[in-house]
Amino acid sequence: MKIVVIGGTGLIGSKLVSKLRERGHEAVAAAPNTGVNTITGEGLAEVLKGAPVVVDVSNSPSWEDAAVMNFFQTSTRNLLDYEAAAGVGHHVALSVVGTERLLESGYFRAKMAQENLIKGSSIPYSIVRATQFFEFVKGIADYSTADNKVLLPPALIQPMAADDVAGAVGRIATGSPLNGTIEVGGPEQFRLDELVRRALAARHDPRQVVTDPHARYYGIEVSERTLVPGDDARLGETRFETWLNQSVGQIPSTKPRSAA
Ligand SMILES: NC(=O)c1ccc[n+]([C@@H]2O[C@H](COP(=O)([O-])OP(=O)(O)OC[C@H]3O[C@@H](n4cnc5c(N)ncnc54)[C@H](OP(=O)(O)O)[C@@H]3O)[C@@H](O)[C@H]2O)c1
Image (cartoon, rainbow, N blue to C red):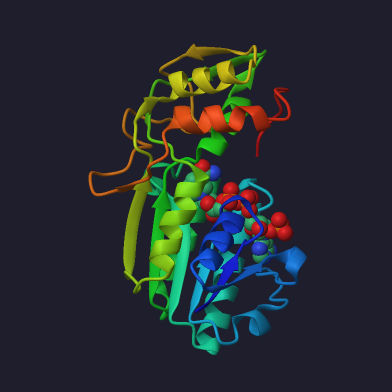
């Protein structure tokens, strides 16, 4: 089956393309550097020809409020319009667990707008909401760093490996449209502050993690269960400790930088 992966060169997209090809599908990585741009429409009509399924795992280059809203609205509208013209029968999109609880952030308002456009279109769809990727934990630390200290609330978090996200999205993409939303998460829950403490220690990152119930997550006030999925979520297999042991040798730098 021809499956077009929008954002197919990104973290999830590249893993998804490999997995789909291993299973014998014709997976096409679509991104600006392969000649497909969902904002301008460049290359969309050509790449969608003969594709029954499109998976959108793209992300906005900027997370500034107006820019990210413009990205997800324009990109999703263009995609859905071109898909309708091409006769695509299944639109799959990757979103985030708890999006409706995180609307204080412009990023999540944009993800909600993306979801609503998909639900309002005529194309059969599946929305896969994933929890935070293990690969994203350092980004959380960087965003929450001030004066070399990382301030985080002890909220629950159930992160998962990007590889397991790609596996889950691949299974949904090769099945029938859900015309609904499914949640995927990791196999274990952690306290956010403790998770980041473990991730930094494994990298010999000297930053101290300070637990502060009033600290924000990406500028958002979160409560105990804001970030965790419901009881019906499908769970990935990879445990954080296993991933950390495998990935820590490949980490190039421990230097803090600002995220987003
Ligand atoms: N981070 C998390 O923990 C988390 C959790 C749950 C869900 N998600 C969702 O997962 C999705 C994928 O995230 P990711 O980390 O894999 O993203 P990523 O690594 O930043 O990759 C983004 C992809 O989008 C492509 N792209 C950017 N602008 C484009 C355009 N105008 N047209 C077509 N493609 C474009 C990029 O191509 P270029 O490289 O060529 O620019 C790249 O292939 C996001 O939608 C995010 O909301 C993330």
